[in-house]
Length: 153
Image (cartoon, rainbow, N blue to C red; front, top):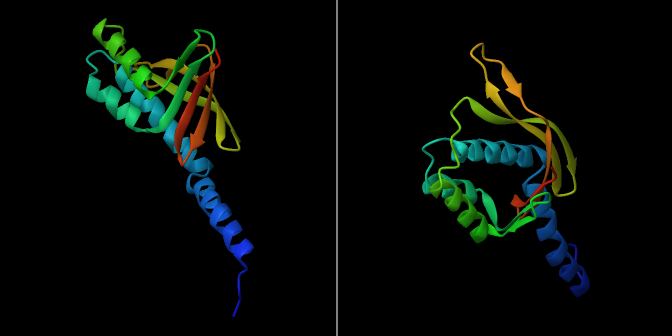
């Protein structure tokens, strides 16, 4: 029978939870969340979107999520990000159709982060997707959920 010292027990109590969190959302899980993020963001961007769409989108995020857009000097927590979405809804800024969608072009996985090259685009009548200029965003993960969205364009 194996006996653990107090020191070993304390180490295991601190290390095991962090190991389970890190493995609770491996790269495939992170990529699925990012795809869901873009899909929900597309829904918000469409004409006729609602506050419920915004709330459903934000429910995907960690409670401590931080949205940063370097070029526009945006730095939102979850509550201020929600207010920004609602302001845009109220002023009628979202006018896309179902044919407008963002797609992931490339991805690079790092420790609790994923760099994503993506583009806005339009699905044409023949079913092909016509993208605009590629953009870069960095996603961070905490407790298995998106905790950072940092736009680098």
